[in-house]
Image (cartoon, rainbow over all chains, first blue to last red; front, side, top):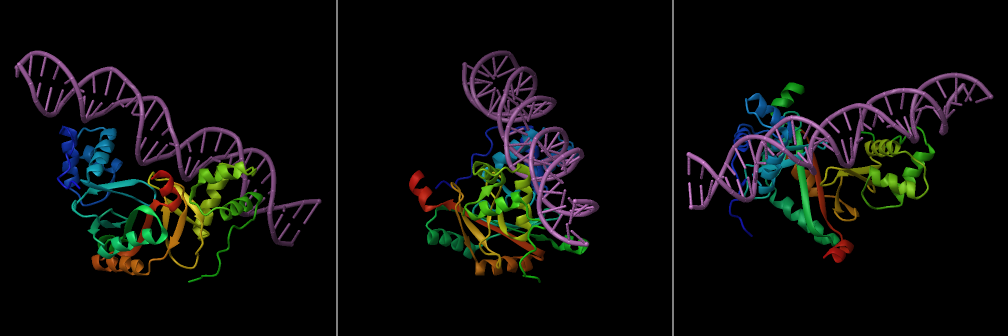
Length: 139
Length: 139
DNA sequence: CACCTTTTTGACAATGATTATCATTTGCTT
DNA sequence: AAGCAAATGATAATCATTGTCAAAAAGGTG
């Protein structure tokens, strides 16, 4: 019931701040390893484990969205819409993504649950494709 | 465009036959390792790698459906509907699942693609919950 | 500021599902 | 029956992710 902003990370550290900044700098879905590489490339000294932990913590508070790509790796990006449940249309090539809301889809999903006698139904919907830029490049 | 039944596995072996039989014996989504264990328990001598390869091959021909659970592991079960694209409502507890078709959902998904200029759009929709039996047991 | 307690960090080891190797075995075809 | 390509399986390798734990840093407090 609480929709007050999540307590965020208990302590703010140089590393966490760096991750937050990095997240603001890109609209793309990247893996923990890619974020780590990006941070290092930009001069931030930060351990891989810390990147993993920070992204996971942020995912739990809803500050970042986490999805899984076809290979099973988890990808993260800052969440632009913390107030409502939403999904993504993500580019398989470059990770660029847009957030989408599916009013009807939510209802459809929950309706299915009842129809088959399932409780505590959750749904996972992800759309992938090639963004305009990548469509042009690759054909 | 070909919707003739897929060529199946090139060569039928004792191991592949065993996997096929096992798949027919259960409605649940199980991991490759679980299928392997089940096969061993029922007296089939079969290597783990073979189970992995066979399930993957069957998934490519569409004979089995493959989904990923919350932990990222791949689960398989025989496909009951090879003719149409469909999704699943799966029990997080026991793996029991029902196939569902979402006429409107398919259209919704492809429509979103166009709206944002994405090409080659694919969608992945999975519903999970607790089946009637597990709801009763666990509360 | 100096101190104290708790959290965080990071280098490294460990985990675990999946995949690759490759010598041996087996299905099929002639 | 012979030959060959495909399949098998024991095992090693991969690789994203998680666990470990001593050292470092954050945020009160007086």
